[in-house]
Image (cartoon, rainbow, N blue to C red; front, side):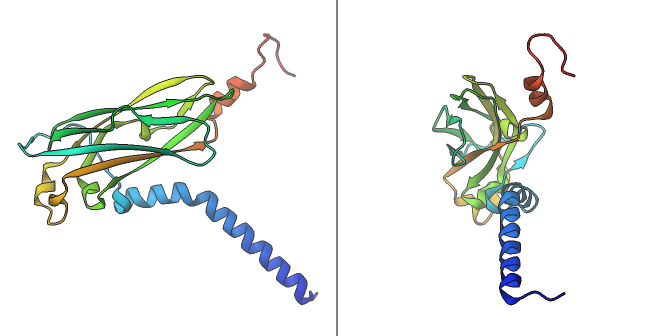
Length: 193
């Protein structure tokens, strides 16, 4: 069966639109995965413990927060900057607030600038490692524990960094299955048949 050129062109355009939509949907998780694997874009390291070495040299850490367009939370750092010795463990807090009338789940992506310093910025604990769920009206303070690896002073480019900016962007994700199930459960004690 042959199709006329207009129909074939229309089908090709629909195919392109579907492909582009799928790529847009997968872009945030794919970019996050790519950055974690390659270290591209200032992606940080994950550590299990603080550094054994603390240098006398200090570095200023700045904190930034943003959110995906249309995301219902308010999100901000509780401190804008701190100065630490290189290798010293730092603790910072971000605050998230859900002013809406519905539960919202979110996941944070992050990066470090300048990009050369990303390989030396190590997180020990971070709210960004897991998804976050805020109920209507809920406000939480979320910690991040980190240090700057002393090896930064031996890197030919990163050693010139006088400050590092840690940036987080929150975007909405689907509610976890158990949260959605609890919301869908009857509240009057009767079973749904």
